[in-house]
Image (cartoon, rainbow, N blue to C red; front, side, top):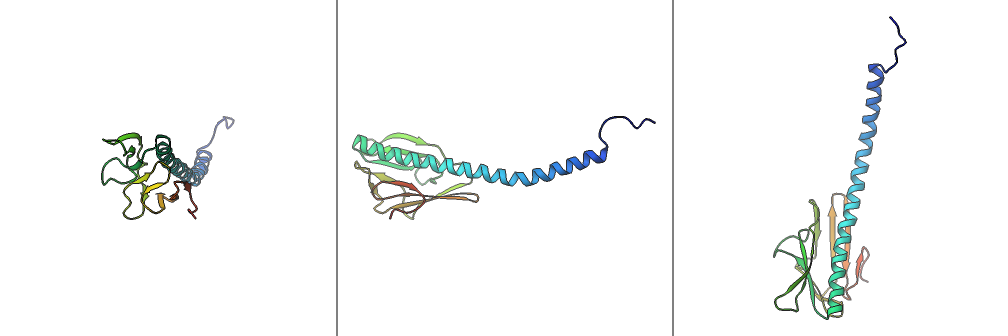
Length: 157
């Protein structure tokens, strides 16, 4: 028999496959964490832009705007609306998409809406609001200060 044929033996293929599977096993958790971190950054950024939009519209139009869940009693991770509550009936200015499944937004007890007055400050509630965002191992805090400033992390000091 001629042993000069080219190719791989079954043992060589199994060893290569085992090495490949070990590398994949190490890479998947890092990739999942990276995807989760990116999703968390994107979603907290979307919320921050919605709050900034509400504040700027309140200033530009000299109105009171409000950010709240679209459905009464719904979670803050569901659809949100930015509404001009000065006009009768109230006018929805923007709808903010829902967070991804598994994401959770937590606001202080009793806060059902965040309103900005015509000067850009908080109309309601009467204290600064710390919004906590959690998605898996990722967490972020978004603060809305009494003067209307919106900042990621830190405090209103």
